[in-house]
Image (cartoon, rainbow over all chains, first blue to last red):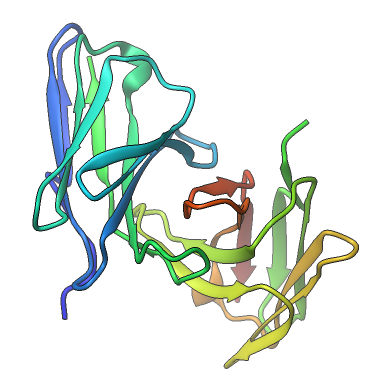
Length: 113
Length: 110
């Protein structure tokens, strides 16, 4: 059983470009959360998707958007990239019932130049 | 002030030492996670606690809900334990949103 898989693992983009990151949750998990982790800091919550809807959102601008598909996989889109968007983007999956174990992907390293 | 505070921020130990990492939080929680992150970036969940104590191999995690405090202990530490250890809480409600501490960088020297 594959855990949480993310792609791509590393990518470099130029300021102003757009990026799409992808996440496949652990089998049977219906909830996907995205986190941004800047170098040397703890992860920050971006948003969470459940039943193809954004259920909760952290303090991130509208340039950050997402989507969840019927198979529970998810995408994170970032428009008009800034240098400060350079970070590790982590996807975590869980069952929607609070208190269940959360599984993390290996992350996608985004560098904006 | 962060809602989840960890101490120490950095910890260097000699192989075989007993290690304790502390986590305090200021919000109501439904569960607390201890996570391990290696330099490559991937995060592994070590424990999920809502009360009491859990043990897995050389790792022990405890939580005191009344005092809003948790500890992660590593017995007989080994260089392969070197990593960042992160405390993260689920702040209740209908979602599994995690609030993370800033992490403790542990280096175990042979």
